[in-house]
Amino acid sequence: MRKLLMLALAGLVAQLAGCYTVNQAALGNFVTQTVQPGMPLDQALVRMRAEGFFCSTSTAGSVTICTRNQERLLRGSCVERVDLMRSATSTQTLGAIEVMETRCTKM
Image: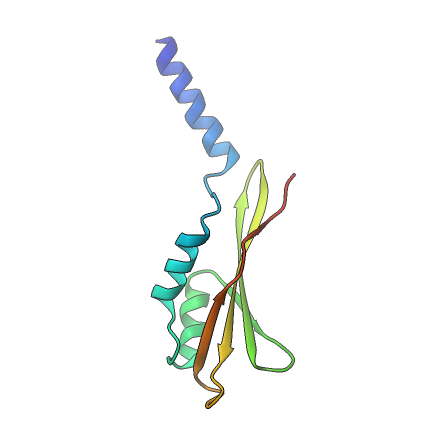
């Protein structure tokens, strides 16, 4: 019975601490499955927004920065960032993708 109580308590602590952990490789794989160079930029933005990213174009217009917050209840939050670069030959086409390092705040 004590072992069962300890397992239940450990599960509760894990839920309160938040389940999100930074996995840069998984984020990179996710992004490359979601958007690819050569696709229309508008389509890439629709896909990123559907996945919870907020996207805004830089003042120069060549880079669109997409960010997504991942909340962690007891450990602060993390911001995932993906930069979408326009093609050099067509401003309506996605030229390159750069997955930036995930940044986390601590409480």
